Length: 493
Ligand SMILES: C[S@@+](CC[C@H](N)C(=O)[O-])C[C@H]1O[C@@H](n2cnc3c(N)ncnc32)[C@H](O)[C@@H]1O
Figure 1: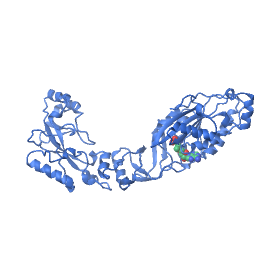
Figure 2: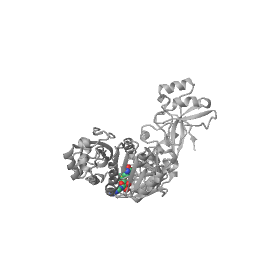
Figure 3: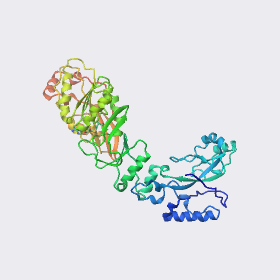
Figure 4: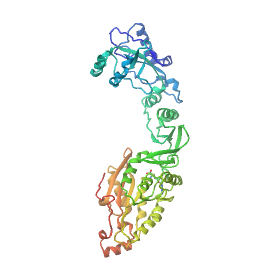
């Protein structure tokens, strides 16, 4: 694997250009052939090539040029021999030196920085970063001092590094294979053992190779999938194609110290929402009543139940419902989560209504907060009208009105204002004085995901005739207790 290359003396006395020696398989490429012949000529002449060889610009760490266009991964084709600078150091002092040389030492995946000196068993070679060190004078003062202190010559030797597929980074490999000048995406979302990609048109001919490289270069990733539709299905799950690795789509993930299992091909899961899930759960207190209208596999519902809230979690997708149930058991909160497999509107008009009616009619003072989470950003605002006239106004003056956390997308310049307006239009009432708006994340250029939180006004949730009768009897402000779980003046965050 490793081959020591005797140092090449130059007639300038210094080696100021990197000498690249390529393995024979590289010679298929005409540009490389030309460069190699220049190198060979100059080697025979006992000198390094000068101005006529423009390999200062050659990317030392680019895989061989002929891998361009490869669609089936051939790992063997990535072999390449590169000459790198090396320092000769006595074996017994190598450990003392390495710390001081760390910043100039060669750093490549899977490459040892200290190798045997094939010519002298008492010495080792410290491989150096060719972009930082080309001659003894390239060392900085700290390194020079350490070398002097340990009586080590700063003379630079050349070492032939036989690079293989393992020594290239994911991005370097994809950049070398995919069409020149086009975008190389090696980015993906990680969902358990699954890497989830969203490849562009020009990358599709290379999709299986990309999948193989992602698996090779990312420990723990054993499946790579590509999204094949935009997320417009009712259940918000992607259609996906397995590009490489296991077909098994049952993933196990941990988010905010909770474990979830689910079939990623059949349910919604977005690792980018973990902060948002945590933010909402932080607003909850033990004993609160939580209704999760679009619960998915439980990233709000299960942490809420772990916080000892009483949870009612719903999802229309039978697969989400199934995995939600599974996750409740997995996290030992099944006793505190009531599960439903209903359309969100039915859930609000039956389950939410039933529970709130029961609560409001107990006649005792309510100490718990009530939270209704509605995370279906493309549609949730449209479900808000289900709260209109939902309840008969209770006789108690201690009723706590629910806080609604409703998500939406906005493409407007002022997303906070836009989403507030969307909700006001549906509920036909003014919310902005009692509403906090949180920008969750930017989902696409000019598209924000926003969460508005507001305490539903009595005039909306209580049935009209009763509400208007009570308006005559006493002002609403006296009748309705405002829980302080979410402060009303949080403003736009
Ligand atoms: C954006 S996901 C959110 C899931 C989960 N709350 C989370 O944060 O990961 C929306 C969920 O709503 C469910 N859903 C879609 N339409 C629905 C409807 N009409 N009624 C109830 N659930 C619905 C989908 O199955 C999906 O699980």
